[in-house]
Length: 301
Length: 274
Image (cartoon, rainbow over the protein chains, first blue to last red):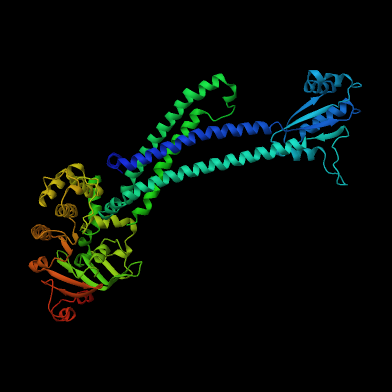
């Protein structure tokens, strides 16, 4: 191994094959740029859908004639169920207050006309994952001997999961999630194919050269090292310029908008330093490893 | 340290054999060598011959007779379909793939199409051969201009191959093949595209190399050259050896098959004793 010699060989190749090197550089630059823009967007969209899903909750209505002790015991039981993250007790007064606030000022009369407070006490249950809503519901009222749901406590009047809403939210958000994942996978695949193709072209243009090197007795690694280093250099530079452009866009456009519009401040997007590190590493690795692998076919002389 | 080590390694494949009990082994020895290309074309068909150390042998025959296949075979660029090939007593079939570069470093080759690296100067083209074997920079600086002077190109060190004429490129190819002072030198049509005067120059060079002990195998169509040199001539036709004689000529009047029996030295008989 002679790193100095190999580096010099790589630089010579870059200089003498300026056009293919530039093409590889541009390809890496553009794909990194696209990925760099797309990753935060996907992350923000995923975070938003998760936020929506987290609104899914269960409500357990309690019989008016249940004693306070029964209600407290029920609370303990609910908290013991797996996948329950948080429970909130809502008293009759609180329930009325919530109803008032929902009705708005001009319809307060409806509440005034009520004889007393007909609203039941309830537990509001938050789940660790919205997908577990069915499990928790079953745990609250497991199927009895006759096949009908039988509540775990006599204090339970009804378990409500706002079924329609829940189903809609679940199906809509999972569709969005699948689409985002597919889009991300496609984009990554397209990037790798594009880079691979560019490298292949560059190798193909020089296949005779590799053949000659083999015929004068060069070992595979003697030929491969300069080429891998070449890929490394192209990858690093392409990645650096792309990251620089992304940073510039972030500084001049996104950050300024964020100051003015709360909407754009994505609550849970990827950290910029992590993104930069990820992109640089990917660009360099794909370029260098791709170069080394593509060469293999042309070294069988 | 490293320099010495690599030198020893480089010379081991061919020269090393001379130290051992195989010192009497011919440089090249083939028995029943048959090469069938993937498409079904037969490159060589049951060729048996031996070429001794320091010999100067011409391979002649019409295009497609197997001359180039024979040369590619010696470099392990093509594989035998049947038969046996020994170089310096070593069976090439048993040579692992990763040892092939070492074999090639000990065989200088002048290619018909020169096979120069287009992105390197003449100097760097020749130097690459030495860099491959791990030669030191000072040794490269010394040897490359020397060998290029030998082929008469000392004024064109910085030129790129496409700036040279065919004959000049051929001479670069020759310089590259010889710069390592390989024990075996193969040349595929070294005078193929050259005018008579340049051809003579190239042949003189090859002759001088042979005088220093290098074994030479030259595939050629150049009848004048063969007739003038009066060296061993091996004639191939459709992949078979049809004539093999010492101090031969390019062409013969009689049927070549009978000539072998009458005047040639059948090489197979030499092998049978071993």
